[in-house]
Length: 217
Figure: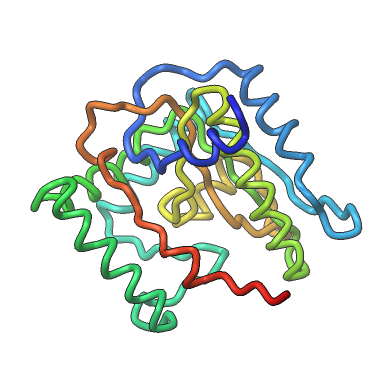
């Protein structure tokens, strides 16, 4: 698959099939993503992948935490949508409006179900950084994550970066032996896209390039 085609064809997958991912494919995806740029070649990230029984343990404990109304406290702090800059809020609101048209009026229930099931991901990649990391490392990790998802797409494997995967870091530390001196920054679900799932009809609009681009000659 051409690089541009892999980037353009990748869409966030919110329901994966039951098909498993070969371990050699997971290793190759990470190995390829390692070619992403890194500040002074620091390569500060560590990658944990949950599959099989470990992933099922995480999924079950995640469901139990949701049912018990345990507050989500990710290592990477978030802010309410209402505190984002005006343009970001406008794009978010447009996205929510589009979901109803693409998925149906019960989209909120569908989201809740899929989040509880961790989107039926067949592997979840957790990206961590050492505590007190440089903000440049966040840029590096973002580049790593994009390279990982594009590489997965090249193999026909769908992906989803999502807050839900990292919302209960204590569970992840217990199941994956992630030490307290590392922050869990992002979780990326991997698997084969279920084209029949309504929730996978969601498509995010992108702004007109001219609205975000300035070229001065």
